[in-house]
Image (cartoon, rainbow, N blue to C red; front, side):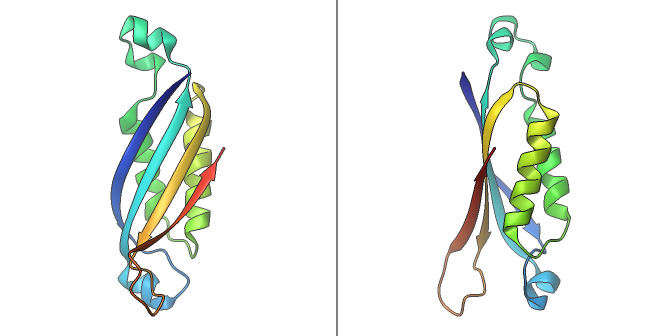
Amino acid sequence: MSLIAIEGMQFYAHHGYYKEEQVLGGKYTVDIYMNVEVNEASLTDNLEKTINYEEVYKITKAEMEQRSKLIEHVCVRIAQKVKNNFTQIQSLKVRVSKFQPPLKGNVERVFFETEL
């Protein structure tokens, strides 16, 4: 078993419960950690036998572009789509971080993380 991670994917998106979040948008990051079986890829140097990072990014970007009220919803959608697209993934963890949430205080970020 091996771990492939894509950390710090940055997006400007319009997720949020409040109207101002939906209109103004904000900064988000997504981190994905995939436990995979890629023995053949490591021996053959064949991209088709492993996880294509570019494809994972495209899936993540498409899901981040779909507006949602909750980062929980966005995070689970990303996790399900990535896992369903790559049979090599045994399990994965996805974290969506939202920067400067409207909490009437000085908060750097909040995040939601799910594992499948």
